[in-house]
Length: 410
Image 1: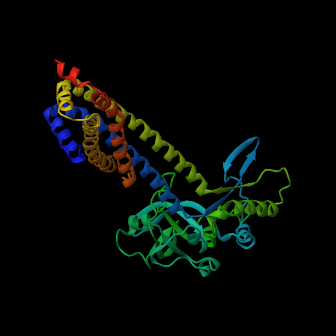
Image 2 (image 1 turned 90 degrees about the horizontal axis):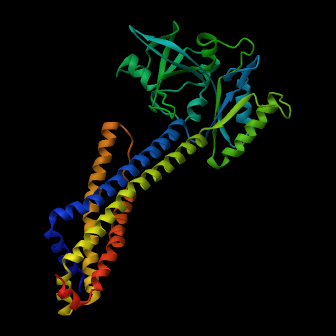
Image 3 (image 1 turned 180 degrees about the vertical axis):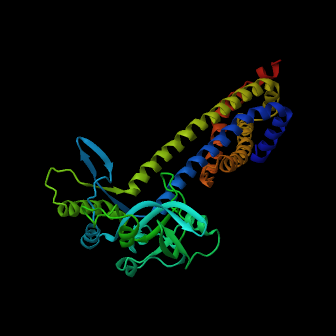
């Protein structure tokens, strides 16, 4: 029997009982739609994590001060001011894999422009900070080394602060007050969005490190050269581990830590933290897809059940066809094509519903989704495989009927 003739006969047989055919396909439709929707949600989560890695800056290592212990109580990360501007300079000069090492201090303050005000993060930085974070400018310029050397009262605004104080108007050249100190706005940073921890990375103002210490945030009396963090950008991702070890060795040497003493600082590779999150998202995607695939198996069982019923109902037809010359493989092909057709049509409908569901989830729940061609192709192929697997037994049973017994069947 030719393939096209088998397809036409299969479609004609399925049209005889339209309601039963529709109900049989429903399991496949739900299964394919569920697989596509769940995989797209998981892929969206992975894409979001990758976006956060890019927003933080690639190949980035952040060095934090250690935790202070007093009376048996550990006061938490950063409570001990152990990092200095000289540490950052030593890292940049002595670690070959490092491009830049940018020290910074951080605090919060009220910023005022005209009759508007906004509470935000004030970050005292050097010009290398935006290079380490791979942060571009929307307008104006970045802080220069002359601004740091002269403790200039100039500021670069994050996107959130810009719109909160100036709306859509150009802030370049305008004067804002930070803790009653006037600053001239010289630049606006490009937006980066939320970090992995839910913080708005654009809600900040960058000012020169020296200015932050002397006029806004103050200095540590015991160590005026201390800084809050050091952002280090490594040239290549493959050198991250080596750079981390060298940074740790240099800081231990500079801080005169003896063998066996704990580090008075912490070195964190942000990409590794995000990689762990990405792996968790990938595993969750696989788990969701596996759960959704159960619906496809249930739909396959439904196809087998209906095909067995169809073989029983059409026993005399099968006997008649065999009596006039149809071979067993022709009968096998006819019923197998019917099962695959059920799966294929259900797969097409499931793909459409799955894509629409992903769009609805993205719009209503505000979750990131990513409908990939691979996910659609995989779900559709799996639906076809289910049709072949669960349709083969009924088709084989039909092909092995004895023509004489089949003709006698009532």
